[in-house]
Amino acid sequence: MIKRKILFLGETYRADAITWMNGLKEFGDFEIITWELKTPNATFFSRILRILEFCTGLFQVKKIIKKHHPDIVIAERTTSYGFLAALSGIKPIVVAQQGRTDLWPEKSLLLPIKKIIQNYAFEKANLIHAWGPVMTISMKAINVDMSKVLVMPKGIDLVKYANKNTANPSKINAIVTRSLMPEYCHDIILKAFSILNQEGIDFELTIVGDGKLLPKLKELATRMKIEKKIKFTGQIPNTDLPELLQKSNFYISMPTTEGVSTSLFEAMASNCYPIVTNIPGNQSWITHRENGQLIPIDNFRMLADEILWAFENSDYRNTAVVKNRKFIEENADYNTNMKIIAAKYHQLINTYKTN
Image (cartoon, rainbow, N blue to C red; front, side):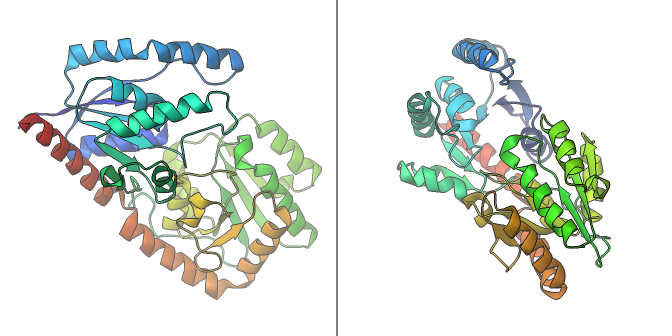
């Protein structure tokens, strides 16, 4: 059997990309060649350099194609790597929309250009990934051919994120697993737990990960006199995360925008009760006070109230986490979903090889 080659255009260090590529190797027996932008997207000056690098990207991609002769090109983000895939000359093309729209930031001066680039990527793609239903909303709004769209998350490893929660049910043991960046609003979470502390509610809050806000968040916790109840783990190996989730009975996430959250799936699989922001990306998976709770953006007082309500209604919460585990098993199992995705890629390749 001929080993098929994939050219992957995207940031290979990202957990989502690693999951995607590993699944294709494991279940599709693909060989994967990669290309990505090297310039960081951190400062205004580096963003300018990144744009210049992007403008020369097609030349680099063409060199790789000439050398390796890939059978298919796949790309993350419709407004960058997806555009390069569409220009590459390779067929078939698979493009994944990573965010709710990929048109970010919403007030960017480049937004009109990004829209044109995205439309071109959608038009040329033979398969478009929507990792969740929320992503199809913007696609339908601009009349994307929905027959080309596969709505399916990559899923998570249900053996790794096992159904073995050991959290003390008589205490709030909450966990946050999002990067310490402004869009994830960790300060709102700390303010909510400060209210619980003032009301004499016992808790432990574990904040996993690193980011530029770590010093400020530590300072805020100290100022609110809850630092002894907060554990900032910093960066941890991904292999340590399942155990931390299984020691927690609440998962809290307050982002201002969301595509499809792997972190939420991991928590749901681990029997952590989810309390998240009331935004479209979360509404796809959580129904308020049915299998979790939805909180308006920046409303730390409601967050505190809803955490306390869920803690006091343990029978409801226990039913919800069982329901969530079943949902993940049926809809977000990495072994099942990646087999389907890998088979779809082989089908696309075979279609173009025979034409």
